[in-house]
Image (cartoon, rainbow, N blue to C red; front, top):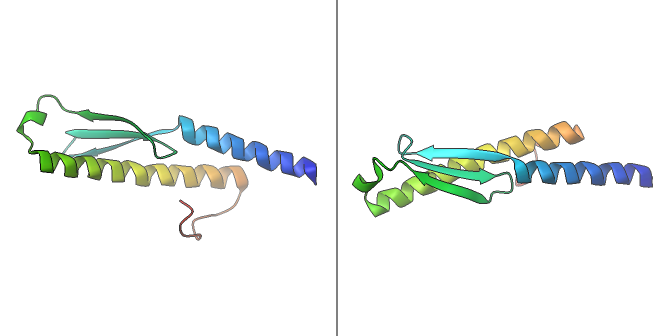
Length: 99
């Protein structure tokens, strides 16, 4: 029984490391804004197209940042779900709220 538990703990640790190392990019405004996050949903960087940023109103820029983050977050969750499914063999797509 404990041997199996060690395997599960190892799988969880591998998944946690994968999520920490994974990066996903979301964009908005036709590439004006880019938000890069990891699999733990932490923002790693926010980047702007320097040639076009000065023409954007602050409110619109805020909306673009939100849109880019939400896009990156969705992709990150999908990749995390795929990794958990691959590591555990369990299909978690029918369990709402996990990802």
